[in-house]
Amino acid sequence: MNERAAPAAGPEGVPSGALTVFAPEGIGEIEAGDDLAAIILGAAGALLRGGDILAVTSKIVSKAEGRQVAAADREQAITDETVRVVATREHPGGVTRIVENRQGLVLAAAGVDASNTPDGTVLLLPIDPDASARALCAALRERTGLWLGVLITDTVGRPWREGQTDIAIGAAGLAVLDDLRGTEDSSGKRLDATIAAVADEIAGAADLVKGKTSGNPVAVVRGLGRLVGELDAADARGASRLLRPSDQDMFRLGSAEAYAEGFAAGQAAAAAAAAAGAAGAAACACGSDPA
Image 1 (cartoon, rainbow, N blue to C red):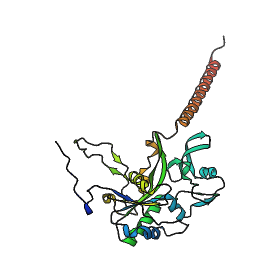
Image 2 (image 1 turned 120 degrees about the vertical axis):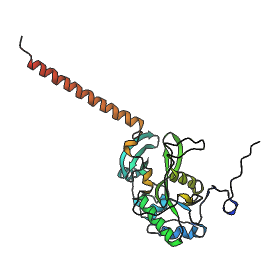
Image 3 (image 1 turned 90 degrees about the vertical axis):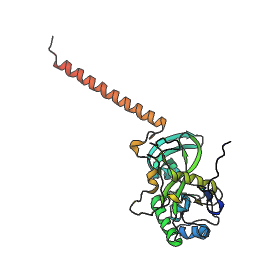
Image 4 (image 1 turned 180 degrees about the vertical axis):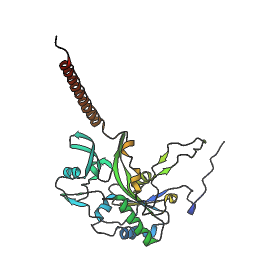
């Protein structure tokens, strides 16, 4: 009988390759202007180790940056944050809009959040989530002396799948993609297309311990120190690397919107062809010899 060998033990008897995710308690309500790094370290500072990645819910970043705005009408706030409408669907409670927002993210309601905010206000996403992640990561590294990575996360739905999960909308101090192209799998076959979206995978894992109602907006992910690296101000793209360029997007519109756009284009082409045919016939009639 073949038995699989046990993985080599890591620190404190933890198998190598093990992933640890936990949510520090004690982070209270965040107000505009708060020192987010100080608040996070007050709750988690003694627990952190070099190579840890902190997944921070975008909501507390937005609150610290003063992105809570007065908005009697959430729908107008969504419109104001929208760059491009991808799809809309009516339902008994109103209309769901999937849009591309100012940050280049495609998600429902442009990321405008009305939960856990005072009546008459909404919360917008950070203006530049990657810049927010870099500032927070720099402050945490400076104050702890530890090699840390930071993700700013938000909750999204996904095409073809029910439910929601968290993704990375901002990142600093770590790789967001693990490009495996050119390597070989366990059978020796070459990988030609595999690029792992590790930042999104980390964000999803972190949400399992943060939860939506627990009041724990930060998670620490340990065991992926190989992804943590330089905080390079010259390369500021961060999580924006995860945004697919429009010329490679096979699903840039919703199905109904794509049909309507194609139908309108077809009608316009038919009308242009008919007009050209009529003009040609008229020219032919004018140029013919009289009987």
